[in-house]
Image 1 (cartoon, rainbow, N blue to C red):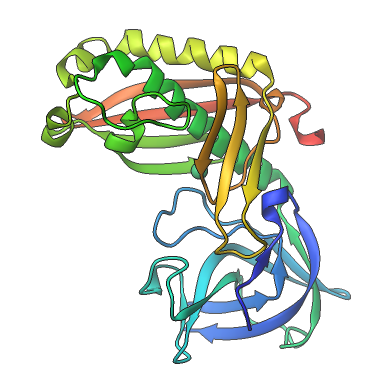
Image 2 (cartoon, rainbow, N blue to C red; image 1 turned 90 degrees about the vertical axis):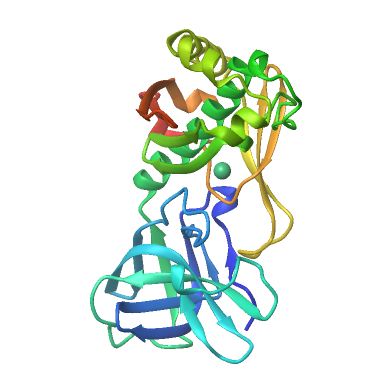
Length: 292
Ligand SMILES: [Zn+2]
């Protein structure tokens, strides 16, 4: 058994495959197939939730509540999600996509069975837009605060000072939006960022970010996921051809195919406490986004 093959990077939301493994765990059953269109939540950087949907066999159907990472150690230990004691792709483990079932395992769901997998496409589309919007918001944020660096913090996917890489603490994507948390602490100051000036001009920066996002949406730029290979552990990148240049960044998630899928993307800042800045990104889908 090798690592699970995945078809979600190309945008697939359905497919046929063979059941490789059915695990009955205390927290519920998990099914592994040879090739899946389901995008699993990452167990170490859980930014985009796993896909939901169903497995079909003849007239039978079972609901998949969420796709998760699963792994089998060389010693035969099967682990799921946050229970996996290794980083994705680590040696000594075979990396799999697990489909968590809602309820018990139907009789037809056995190793070797050929099943039809169907992802909840509307939810996937919303998550893809949310993920693309999240990355665009971070790139726009980096540009909007580029003048506040006194030292070189390294560069982002567009070649600008990488505030996102230095300050982002967590990123949570949902349908048509995301919530990012940034730490404005001592280490950011030490890295050469003028936190005081940033905090004093937050609303002006927010307006700058939103103006840029609006221009990017108007550009209708193409967006896609590139892969180094067919399995869940092969490296994947998000590529977006923005007017400022091609943005290319490592990313395991799913994305909109074009910025034409949006009517708008905007952000709002909120200071949760003196050291924590929260950026809420909201995407409004184009009226016909679902038909694209
Ligand atoms: Zn990403």
